[in-house]
Amino acid sequence: MTQPLAIVVYEKLLPGSQLANRLRDTNYRVVVISAANTLIESAKKEKPMLVLADLISTRADICNLIGQLRKHEETCHIPVIAFAPEDDATLPRAAEAAGATLVVSETAILNHLAQFLERALRVE
Image (cartoon, rainbow, N blue to C red; front, side, top):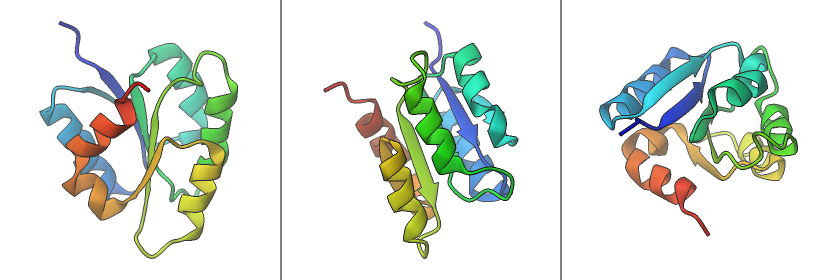
């Protein structure tokens, strides 16, 4: 059986690398993207089962990229789990408005990854 693929977008080492490692531990193949502006092309090429994105970026507007992902026919179906620090209320709202499937805190993503994966991948 082929392992599902997840794209993880992050600049900060923590929690990004921890998240990628936890996904690998749950038998996901992981493509890490540190240059967020390559997300759309990577998603088109790699065809991931889901995208996990750190909303904090010094080089790209991640919420805008989530919106772009939603606009492309080849990528609009991909669930996106976005995460941000607990003390930031603005970015989560912007990510939801852009079309993120689920927006959670950095701490929660690491502690409840299995539940978030199940929720994001649920077919309705």
